Length: 498
Image (cartoon, rainbow, N blue to C red; front, side, top):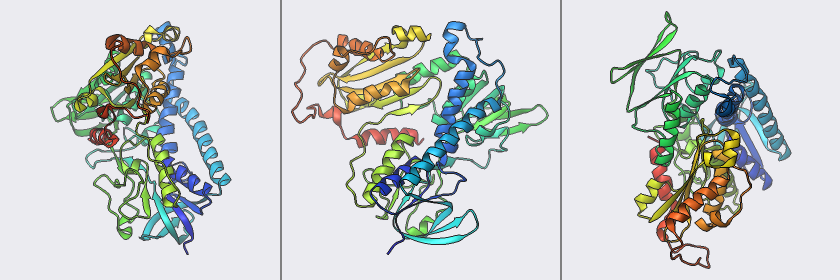
């Protein structure tokens, strides 16, 4: 007999959701967390800290009010690192308290320490108090997350040359910052510090950024960043990073020969799975060159049937929201309970300034599939709510099939994008058409009115031409519009992993 039905290694979004789901099915569950407190990367160095930092920066700088009161308007004239950290600590305490209560309420056992495999069903745990013990389990879920990629040629010192984890511990807000990497994390932090009036330069070896986002949205986003004097250097590779203590500067030399200077350098060019201490070989597993594990996309099983993996450690999309759902599905499958398939369309949120959120197919993916389509666009400045809020930027774009008139994708850049996207997500998954947006009533004045404006824009371009009656089964006769979602994921995964 095994001591546990399920052992979960890691207590981030995937781990905690899996543990609670298995416990609700009356299974004996153990969560092993090597950090001082539960929550994983999401709570302590990733999702929650970065979003809290963003909100704090927007509030203290008065960023949202500058449309009315001018660019010099600030709520607090001098903003220090301690001002940013104060709200962060309060938020983290709350998140940990909620999670601890959830574990206690559902009778999930916890243990602090480092875990590794002895064999496929035996885990050895080196507890933080020094005790070493072995436990056996029927199933295992690996939800260890990722950590920043730290190449050996970058002289990280935790003070002037930092990774994204170390950035949360800075003592002063830099006057200038070079961000290496224009992925999601790099862009989020770059735009957050830009709101604090830090002079920001972004260096990216690719010719563009955020390749998995609709190109028109990225172009609008890049225009807004350059408009506020951020430098975006695409197609540039970092050759050397040096610290000049005498001038209190960091120097970044590019392969092109160009030299950049700033008070601080943030290296945010990728992350690697935290699997190197698990002794995967003893379980019959092997990670890829980035420490990630390959799983079945429907059950999240690894190549060893009773061992599962979920969350960032399995790669794209690496979102807290999708990680939670992956953990829940994996846990149900692991304990023999029926589990639904992962949703076909999920929202992707980028908490930059401004926000970006997307769901469904991009225009590039629609063209690649050969689907006849039309788009509708609304600018936030066209809405009364946008005027009230002082917005002069922000746009919402929807893509519709000309054959079935169904919504294929929704893409938003601007204030509240990560909230607004859920309206489009619901219509998308319920196979709604352009008529929903034209005929429906939205609260006035709201930013959600942009859906009606964009819907009317598309409807006017499409006309009332012939449209097919809905199929009784709820499935479209436009097979190109509902091609296997695996193709969507594979394209985005390919772009996101570059």
